[in-house]
Image 1 (cartoon, one colour):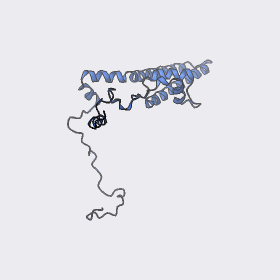
Image 2 (cartoon, one colour; image 1 turned 90 degrees about the horizontal axis):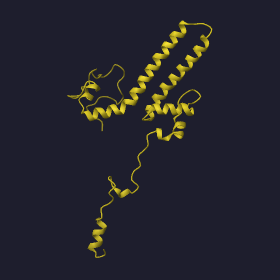
Image 3 (cartoon, rainbow, N blue to C red; image 1 turned 180 degrees about the vertical axis):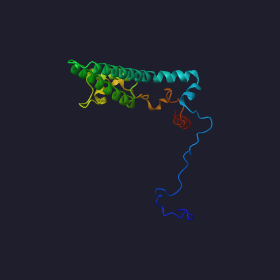
Image 4 (cartoon, one colour; image 1 turned 180 degrees about the horizontal axis):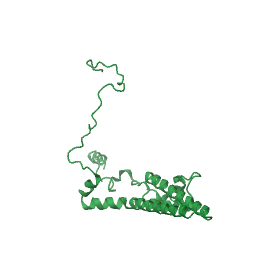
Amino acid sequence: MPDPADKSDGTPPKDGEGEAPPKDAYEPPPGTPDEFATFLKAQPPEAREAYDGFTVSLRQSVERERETNKTLRRELKTIAAAADGSTKADLDALSEKLTVADQRIDFYRQAIREGLPDPDLAWLAAREIGAFTKSGAPDFSTLKAQYPKLFPQARKPAAQAGAGTNGEGPSAVDMNAFIRRSAGRG
């Protein structure tokens, strides 16, 4: 039911009309860490170790990609400085390396979205079977068909619905058994 004190006709205000929220309207609750590093340092050692274990392969992958890009840039400068008859072949080889590096970066970005726990192993597998489209984009459906264990597996629940969360099964005493005993049938 509309508020009788409200004088608007239900249309949103036009640009410049109405009150804009203040720029600093969000105030974090007291005790909220300013940076994630501060938050992580405040955690118990077990939590920090679990976080490090979870992110170690991702950090290593990013570091390797940075080193690869630095190396390729150095090679490009060296080849450009020594321009002679063999420059064409060298530039073609370097171009291929840059294409593979870009393809690898795209692969890692999509691998993270796919939830792959080991993007390095998935990259090697994709290169081995050629799991890429004609445009060079990764083809994760082909990769999953060939190497399903690279992808996170869904956990299967217990086969017996009444097994409970710990697999202990239903208790021996239930309401039906109580009624049967009371009726003299069990």
